[in-house]
Length: 75
Image (tube, rainbow, N blue to C red; front, top):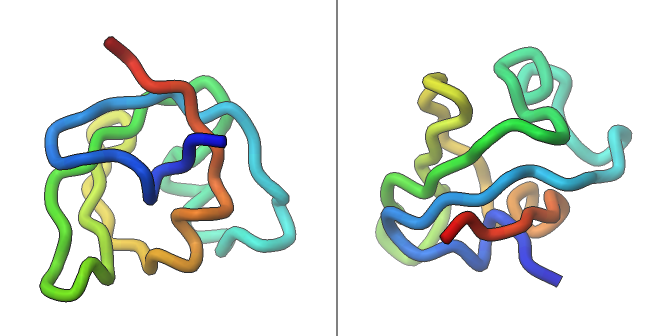
């Protein structure tokens, strides 16, 4: 299963699904919804947190949250 945490810098993916109870509401309000595109902008030192772009909204999320959001990579 591919997740946001498996993306490499500059790679993009389409959010497929996630457990709504395990994702912070603020992240959902910022556009982390199935069907939206996500791009990994960069990793912080030690790979946590991840800096991502979700449909124009830039946000930092913890790796423990990123592994819960499944994606389909965009080629």
